[in-house]
Length: 79
Image (cartoon, rainbow, N blue to C red; front, side, top):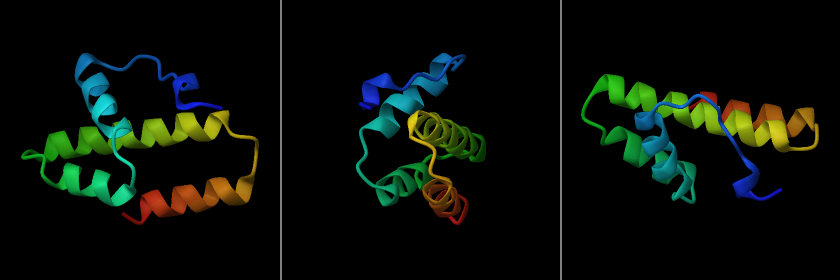
């Protein structure tokens, strides 16, 4: 599975911008640092929503491995 295989339906233009930015990062720390610099609370919430949607879309494409999925979800929710 390549990242180009991931599709998230129904994103607003602003959410698409956020997704495009998030795809460029290599680590969760980079994502967290970028989100922390967003000036508004609403903007930070929107970015986290898009991030979670992206993770869910990636996990949906993975072979079912409940332990690995739980690991990713725990990592995200602990941030």
